[in-house]
Length: 419
Ligand code: ADP
Ligand code: MG
Image (tube, protein in one colour):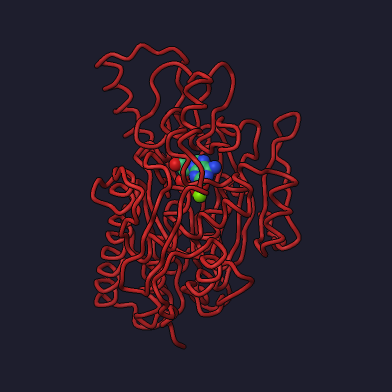
């Protein structure tokens, strides 16, 4: 098998269609290579410790130092209590699998390697690969690292082409394509709204944004104001914004790219049976220990951390990626409304009464991650139908009238085992 997947191309300013075509060449997974014009990619960004935290705030909170400290302490405690949305349904004997864990992007990661020679030397090598590749992702796509491509591009008040890594350009190009396909439901220029509604770097402490603030934020958005120029691998790509105030936020796609980037490193090491998971987004390569597809549990959405985790269903994956987005881990309630961290860029408001969760199976974790967020915005039936058109397998859990969870899936999503 060969993995030198990226043909070189001439640097130029690409139209969006050209970018879509280019992207179809960027999939790290040999078995998934070019499908219909789209494809995958990479990448990451990120989430603070609050990422896995359920934050319940009163609407008009006067924040003093003490309250701030208490909020910070609660974040830490809640984060510590938090759990993966996906975990492994089978727990093979320790000797059958090498497990490596760590932290990245404000969440945790886990790598499981099956196959032969699972020794300490392999552990060290894999740890080095993961550390290096995740640091690369951080240096390209983090909104939290002021030196990252994304942070420097956001800070730049210029409409000139801005040099970024090849990978940052590739992921941004895919994100811009998905914006187009989803008619703006997925939009990486959503940063000003994310801040306004109190997600991302700082939780909001104060009143709900006014309609003026919302329309002001929206006036600085729009993926159409973004152009991407891609170079060859190991050379720069370029981003260009037609409005100097435009910002990008790759948080909805970054963990997925992180998974793909680490997986690519494992393939290069000639390991073909492994799982890579970051914060619930996963790629399952080859077979689990003992043979057969990897088995992953999808967590049932529950609002309270202390209810513990309940398996909703079990999915088998082989050379496929899966991602889950949900409004049940990160949200706050205000006047009885559930304010989700997924924002509908078309309205400027957080998604309300959307699905409890969206699970996507795709050829790459980058695609799965981005589509899961898109489906949280589009919901049922529009999102499921759009995903199917793009050959993306999707399942939503929607809340019925009495709060019960109803499963909706498109024709591509496999039958799952209900434990
Ligand atoms: P989940 O794990 O639930 O999918 P992600 O971390 O993947 O959540 O994405 C949530 C983040 O994506 C938000 O914190 C915000 O930065 C960004 N985001 C929110 N709404 C959108 C949207 N409609 N399009 C693109 N990015 C979004
Ligand atoms: Mg996502």
